[in-house]
Image 1 (tube, rainbow, N blue to C red):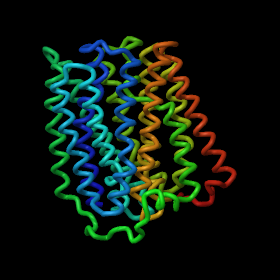
Image 2 (cartoon, rainbow, N blue to C red; image 1 turned 60 degrees about the vertical axis):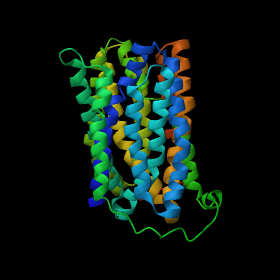
Image 3 (cartoon, helix red, strand yellow; image 1 turned 90 degrees about the vertical axis):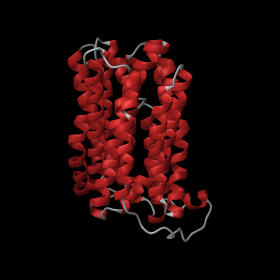
Image 4 (spheres, rainbow, N blue to C red; image 1 turned 180 degrees about the vertical axis):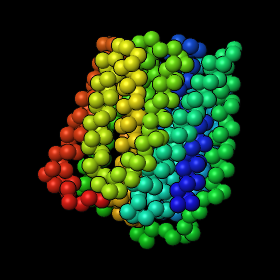
Length: 391
């Protein structure tokens, strides 16, 4: 559990840093450079998708060379570089470059980190391990958002650039946590020296099915920046929108560990199906929201969805992957989701500009319900076997 705890602290401090900045990005783009929702969708979609292509390969190389800790550290280090670039931004193109650098780092670190987590947990406690990690991750996110909220509502209202600079402190603390993390001795490389796609072909059908479900779902799950824009559109101030984001992260943090433990007891699939359905209900709430109470309730439900899905789906992928390809498949899972984020964010931005804010959220809800139905149907008819409670 020591590794799991310190990996959680890495994510805790990194997310304090990240979320001090992330909710400000759409506000920064709009106030400084006059960006439209379509441009914000383009920036977020490009950043997420371009970087996501790295995730499967970083997972593959962490499997092949067993340098998971070093690869993860390099990915987290880019978080500091990201903040430096933001401090120098004088156009939306520089902000785009900064976002690509940040997502590049996430693309590099995600799979080896998740593989380290999986290696450090007993098989019957994968949900607990990923749930604890997600709880610390989202607790850091909540704290980062709260810090930013307090800074921008303080006397004189702190400038964007000041917050960007302050966010580098927790990013550095996250890197220090790596000194306490252990990994298997390097040199235990894959016995099978097949090319990348030769190894991937070994994966069985239920994982490919799940990756299809992830892609379908993510097409409607656009960048969270649109949630903040929606909050502003119905009358929330900038600090009020950031406070909503804090409520979402706090809800996810409180519920992630119980959700992970529950998945250990009842099986991952029995939580994933209602998790996707919950997202659909949540996005319907965003679509119809015209009042602050409805928007607040939708953000809380978004936190519930995050707790039900974020850690559990990674535990599910780790559990059904061949042991020698665990990092590769965790990376492929992140790549599939990341690639889908580009069209998702672009579609959301274009639909928003053409039809208003309700339509893109209704579109996302429809795809979430479809993904839930596909996974449920396959579960019922045994393609993902219902008797395999730990799958």
